[in-house]
Length: 468
Image: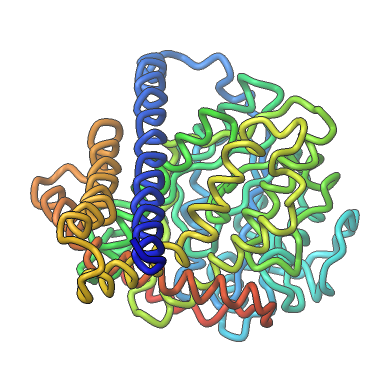
């Protein structure tokens, strides 16, 4: 056999083994998630009984960074004001919005200027003013110069009065009992330093008075693809890693942290475009290096509903930003990987993220192009090409279907048969173009990270059409 044949065979086997390892790793996480969900289902039997900690939960500061969010901010704040939680405050951080965000907040909640001094534990852009609602004593608004989401969160941490803070996106809707559920691990385990909840797609749903009144599916195909994508990412991605205490990301849309631990770690990294993941990875790295016992948990039942992009340009910007943020988060914390005290985060989760999430789009798209070209030119047999299609697409369909299965087994959010049928079809269709397009956008993000181009958030269009 000549060198050309050996090279083709080697590349073919490498690509096949990569896709097999990728999908089998996700299937293993799926199995871990199933066990975790069964255990949680058994514990949920006691939820209807009187709770020992009812009314004694630690107070929470809800931080809501807002930049050009006039379309959704009022409904989001109304939903948070009606949360069933003993003691909490809401701090909206207007990050130099160019639209009417501050105006609609002032009109809806009767804001008046407030002379307030607070400890500057973390450096931020200049604060222009602090406002307090005349209708809701636990609502304050900070108006500051534009500095990005991380800078806004740091400003919110400076102003926060309580030991726990919850970061929530300005376009999000929380269920009434979300805080009670997501804070539960802090009550049962003093070593817990952070928890995250589930994020679902609000497109196609109906919201009235700040609360989700009807669960529906979006008519927009891009948003519909993202429904399945989010089910897969949260229900067996993060749930599986949480069981191993190896979860490296808590969504910036909905997560709770111990304020003192975050301040000691330096707060959110302002220059990072993926500030939510970077903070969690840094917490793992610093606490592992100290040998300090801690837990970071994912809680699947509290739900935060958020608006998904419905046009290609906005979705593209989002995915490029996510991939670049992933690269920044991992490269800034290399010391965690294979470190002496790395445990599951350093020896399992970090290498997994590097191989399958960070470098994944390069290998996946390269694999598609090579196998298609090699088959067309007769370099690989139809049997080898069929095996590739099975592991790359067939197992991808299986993974999407397993995410939907976990949703149906556990929470049953989409009860109608037509909804389940639509989601089942999406599990199949998304593997023929949508996932490959996502891989291309992620590859662009990887390239921009490698070139160290200036990071830009891009315009995120908010329609707010799900609000009544």
